[in-house]
Image (cartoon, one colour):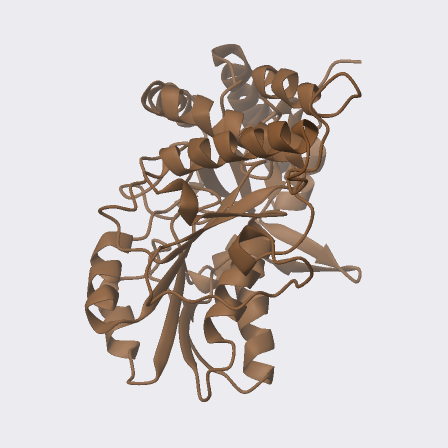
Length: 382
């Protein structure tokens, strides 16, 4: 059976073969299978050394100190640890975020509201971006934390974290950035980007699922309360036996991403241009999000006259993501697309195409031709 063309890299990436080869060395009896916290024998020492090498590899991609990397089970846990940990034991805490953040941030902030925190929800512009002035206007004396994603997972647009972070740093307000969709796609340097907390994911960067990290800036001003207790691992911020093989995989994946960052971005940008060029003969295609401030691999399109669910059914040979999600037999439009002002009708016609490391020129040509064919047929039978 022929496999569909995979154009859903923003959902997850395949593990790079070099990463898988490295991970297997840390699982079996003839490998390094020890507990990194076992300090009394060589099995543990070897595992700890592997974990620390991976910590330095992850730190290197974002130009951080390895001691600033805290291992987690993924970006969702990192978001929870950063946000809940920053406001723990703070009375009358005020937070600022946006309505189009990842659910890991949105739902965490909604939970904190129920606990008594006050949250300001910023509305993005039609390009999907939060402007620095919006953040500055929402600041209060009791503001504890601002949480904004670096790259939006549905639109691919980029937040001006440097300008926002500089102002927040001058006021002593913590700044958390979810960079799950940014790592490996654009340069990140926390020595010039004034960020205090940054969430990272393994499986968005051709590493394994189930592992992530939280960058925690080494400063007395940045104090995070642990959310998982039992053993005091990771400098007391995140207890639990470390999964050496997954951590090694994430480290290797980040090292590969750092080495290939520039070339890969150029390659994906070229594929994106070819993809949109192949759709140019098709009228009624709308690009959602910013055309100027974006990463190359995420393309969100609304197709006039065709709803996303019908289009996805027609595109059986493509693996893509719908801008809509089904819940309880009712189709609800993406909250991100509604958040940037799209009508329910346009939001229900949106598909996200995401391109990655293993996408080929031939696959892009096939995908654009398929879309033109299916859209043309669906419009003809309306």
